[in-house]
Amino acid sequence: MQRKVIFNNKLLPYLLLAPQLAITAVFFFLPAGQALFMSVLMQDPFGARVEFVGLENFRTILADPDYIASVWRTAYFALAVTLLAMVPALLLAVMADRVVRAAALYKTTLVVPYAIAPAVAGVLWLFMFNPAVGVLAWLMRSLGVDWNPTLDGSDAMALVIVASAWKQIAYNFLFFLAGLQSIPRSLLEAASIDGAGESRKFWTVVFPLLSPTTFFLLVVNIVYAFFDTFGVIHAVTGGGPAKATEILVYKVYYDGVIALDLGSSSAQSVILMAIVIGLTFMQFRFIERRVHY
Image 1 (cartoon, helix red, strand yellow):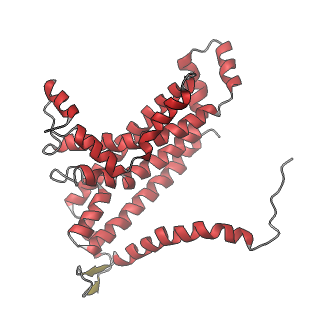
Image 2 (tube, rainbow, N blue to C red):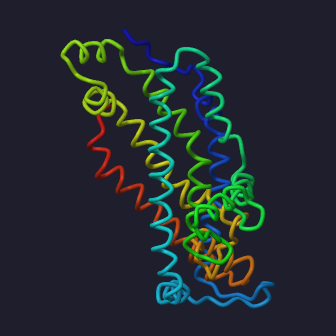
C-alpha cells in the first residue's frame, strides 16, 4: 500500500518549487524572451538607433548560404558527437559492471573527465594534436598521416568532435552503469539457463531494459552537442579554419559578439532554440514509443 503525500500547508509546495522556477525564469525564459524581442529589431552596436524590421532578420538568415551550410555542419557534428559519446560509454559501462577487484578505482577513473570544463578539455586535445608540439600529431606524422587541424577543415572538425565526445563519455557512463546495475540478476540467470550466450543476453535482455536510459541520454547528448560544445570549439579552433567548425551556437556568438550584428544573432538564437525543441519533440513523439519502461 502506497502512502499519499499530503501537504497540510497549501503554500508549502509552491515555496519548494519557487527556487527552481526562479532559476528557470531568470536563466531561460527571460533571455529567450529578450532574444525573441531583439530578433525583430535592427540596431547599431551601441543601441543608439533601433528600428523594427519584423521578420526581415529571419528572411536574411535563411537566404544566407553560409548559414545553411552551418545548419548541415551542425547536424553532422551533433550526430557524430552523440554516437561517439554514447557507444564507448555503453561499452565501458558493460565492462565496469563485470569488474570485481578495484571496481571503485576503475569507475572513479572513468568519471574523472566529466569534472573537466569543456574549454579545458578542448585545450588538452589541442595540445596533443598540435602540429608543432603534439605527441599524437607527431605519432600520426611518423605513420605517414598529414595531420594539421590549423589548416585542414576536416582535421579540425574531427578534433573538436573527438574532444567534445570524450568530455561527455563519463556522463553517459554513469547513467549506463546505473541502468545495468538496476537490471535484476534473475533475468540474466534465466537467460543463461536457456542457453543464451553473452552477446544474445545483451541484445535480447540487457539492451531492451536499458532503453529508458538510452533514450534519456540520446536527448541529453543531442542538446549537449548543439549548445555545450561551444567552449570546446572556442578554445580549439575558434570556428575555423575558414569556418569549417562554425556550428550554429558558435555562429550566434560570432555574429553577435564579434560582428556586432545583434538582430541577426538574436534571430539565429531563436531558430536554434526552435530546432532543438523540434528535435526533442520528434524524439519523444517517434522514439519514446519504442522504449520499454
